[in-house]
Length: 285
Image 1: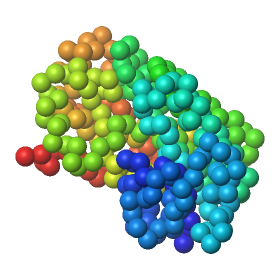
Image 2 (image 1 turned 180 degrees about the vertical axis):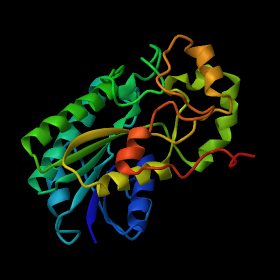
Image 3 (image 1 turned 180 degrees about the horizontal axis):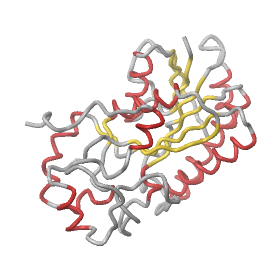
């Protein structure tokens, strides 16, 4: 049984990732400042902005574990504005550097981490360069939170250049949702501007967890990034109508279905074998 450390294990996505990996045969080591929601797994409270704690958490802690085979790094201040910008930068950038560096020192070469849809230019106050958006255009961070995610992607590229045996996969997750969040989705139809900030996209936490597992299991070296969203939008209104109202001049890169995600998951499907299994449609009365 392979052992994987999950930082941010108590977060909105982290909870689903811990459950999914455990249920698919991974031995999970939960690392967070809060206890994991799931009982019966290895867990340690850790401050990842302290390099010594980050290293020990991955290399082995007393009778908890004697090292890990892989790392999923989800821990972060999870969105812009929750803390002052300098605090967000200091926490998120320091934690990511510490975790990546500690993993290397501990011999871990299989790393998956949470990048973000925000590097695509969110919120789309400035129109996207085309739709569906994909991984082909350079990051356009519009907040300190997103700036850190952009810097993390560059950090990953340089670390993989230094360590040719290293795999670092960044997953640009969309807005994480649980089934209990779906009750409010029908209300979005009344005003297309409410969710234009991420092109009306979302990711079911369970499908986000699936993407993490697929990335861990992907046999490769080097760094790569993938947009991870659900196959559909949060809207009942068709994309053609939404775009005509909000982004009438944005070029159309390829055809899409009426409610197909406008954050393209083609690359994740093709390379990782990712395929969303959940949708809000039919789950709301």
